[in-house]
Image (cartoon, rainbow, N blue to C red; front, side, top):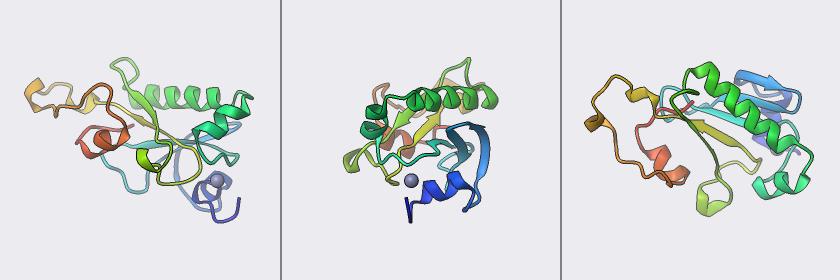
Length: 137
Ligand SMILES: [Zn+2]
């Protein structure tokens, strides 16, 4: 799709700090990270949002989840736990209209007292999570 930032990143037209790739997906560090690490996972093919990629039903959504997990393993947060979030639609803070998964984890606080951890409800959507000081992978 013309003028799509993530299509341009997927094709290599716009350089990105790629951390992992699979046949139909690319994982790269966000250009404006909200924390020490912050990785987005996108399909190479253009799907505007989660609804579109879910409707495709051809395994590409599973490939995104698999790649996100591999990134978490690479980042050393897989054992402690991490989350994979799809911000879908304007009310959920989807900033680029090419579906993306954000992989994040709170492992940055390991070794620090629990009192230092900001309160982030387990069911928080991406917005509050992004605004916290949490580590993202
Ligand atoms: Zn695109």
